[in-house]
Length: 214
Image (cartoon, rainbow, N blue to C red; front, top):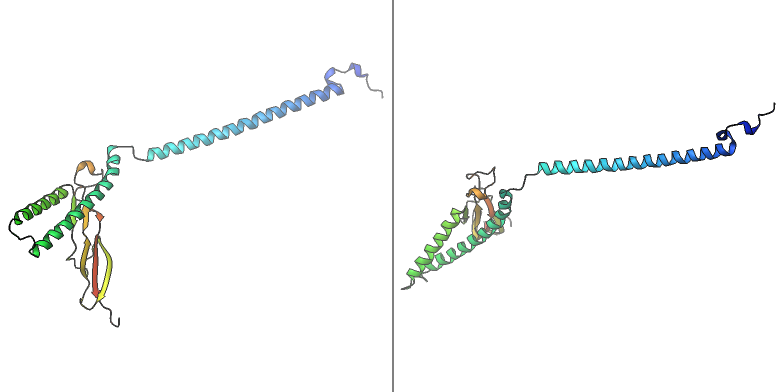
């Protein structure tokens, strides 16, 4: 059987033209596929960005908004620490004046007036600190055998036969409590009658009975 002459076929069905058409079609499909892949990649990146944005918004929404209380709260800790230092210094001055007075070294004529003024000023400072919610607590007479004090810190302990139970031998620093009395310093959930914060523990040296056979 003799094939029909080539000149009678349409141009697109001739081998050279058909090959070129298929190649062009393949290139077009490849370009479309590349465009589709790029679109998928861009869509994935946008979805990740949106998810990250939603997470950030959720995190921001869960956090409390900035308020004067937050700023005041940042101020509260250094304020309390500073007041603790002042309280300890006043306590030490009071210890010195009491010791000098008990030894009679401040009982000379003309000095009693100055001593009374110093003691009066110390008492005024103590009342001023209490009005701010700062209180000094001396645990020199604490009963360590029956009481539990969360504001007590034993720096060192001496085992000795001089005592029959654990006692406070020396107070190095008093405890300092801070009760938030002023409304501007108080958080929303805090009450004026809640237990005080311990901003300085009472540092003591103790003595305890020697262990048998020690």
